[in-house]
Image 1 (tube, rainbow, N blue to C red):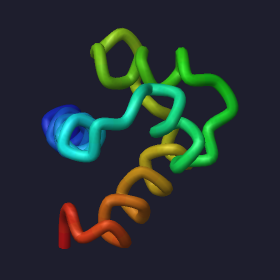
Image 2: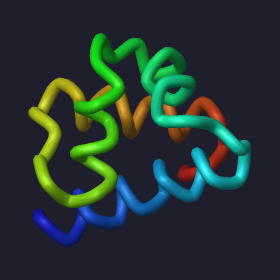
Image 3: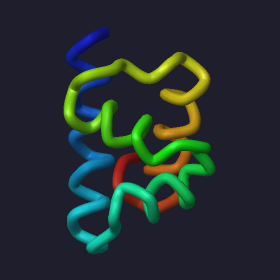
Image 4: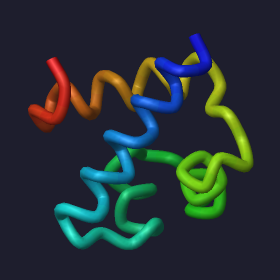
Amino acid sequence: MKKDIEILLKKLNEYRLENKLTYKELCEELKVKYPGTVRSWLKGLKIPRDTNLYHIEKFLKQKGVIK
């Protein structure tokens, strides 16, 4: 399970870098309140809660990053 989360967060970071988004801009797209939260996820300091993981996966599917 942890490996799946790492892959999902890696894809999210790749999306951010590919689209030249700041943490704040990605935070706004994900509708997360604090940019520091997204930064912590992507740096591996925190693991997103289940509801956030669900929305990250849904977001990446909508953007065509994952299937």
